[in-house]
View 1 (cartoon, rainbow over the protein chains, first blue to last red):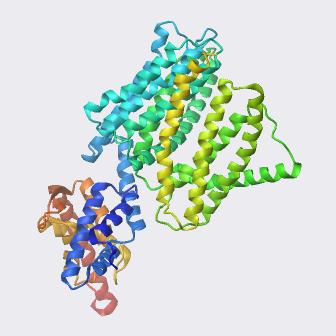
View 2: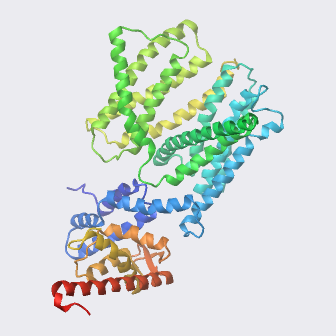
Length: 455
Length: 120
């Protein structure tokens, strides 16, 4: 019994467990720990040994679920107050108001930024629009503001601010200096990969400069999923708004299309990026997040889909028809499967023993890998026949990147189910892998045009 | 908040005035407040310790108490709470309400035990 955990270790574990409850903030944990320690001291003075005192103390503090629910009730009220920005709130909401002001200001700045190129004659809508310019540069108009938002919110040290600018300057140079032709494939690839590279770069600001910390990265993954959901919701609302606007103005004989397509849509789409981020940050501490719920819902459905597909393929003895889009389609499939895996991991309690859902997940990943291997096989044949084009290479690279991640995830999940490795390994693998996506995205953005001679 | 032998709703309802009253004796912190509650009720009013904190935070947010960080005797970080003047006013208001309830209940208990002794 020499490796029995000390009291400090046990309290450390307890703290960690509590920290996962998003409704409980670190100051609250500090306070609860003081209580726990005082309780333990009193119990020890009464003659209990360290273990007993710890157990009784934790028990008296109450079951963590109930406790964090109580905190969440208290906190959601505070949150609601901040959202409606009631005057005369307590000091705790002054930080909330400052965040809100920063978010609104930066959203407005992003909305203005997207219109600046028009001053130089680059049209965003209409028949003479410079779409390829806007597509390539879109993320550069908004993500810098997002980075600033997080840098302000996290209080990033002044000395680290220059690092923030590096990816944006680099991205701006690549997107505008490379001589892309009008129908350039590599230009489109840059337009697709630059936002991904920049989004991952924003992680630096999100983590307050501490991007090496695994848990910060995991938080960024969580944030990204929630952000996506919020943005989709805002976009839906915006679509309804624009549809109605165009309808009611037409009834009085005005055509608002120019204002909608030239102003409302681009400015709104830019501003919404910041607003969605702010909303996610706000809601962060309420009990449940949305992404894990959707994950639970769709993991069984996707698993069923893939299994039926494999069965159908065997049944028909079918071969995958290799069309142009096939590779991209399978990339999307892997992205979705990875997303389901990632959000299930991010929401899971790492202490919980392996369960049925983990098995389902293994099945999902394994079936996706089987389907993808068959597709890859077919595509490899095509590439060996027609050679490497920029699109095929980019799609294939992404496919391999995802394949490696999922394959190792499957191995780790299987070992976790067998009780051989702790769940944290799976979490670590995902967060450690994030830079690989960044490297690939930047590679495609910056070097593909050079390698493929801007074709 | 779970009570050993007092109804749950009653414990919840009495929690705020009780905490305010204890703080009116002087500034204090979570663990000491729990101890004081146990002392005052002879151990019959038992709270789940953790539940005190969301309550204290609510009181703080409503400006009834003021929280500040200090140190314990052993040098640990400890959060103390002090009653504000708004808290004193609230305590007084609650005290009057409880006394009112108490008086009413007493009257009705007496009547229930001995119908002849109804107050005139």
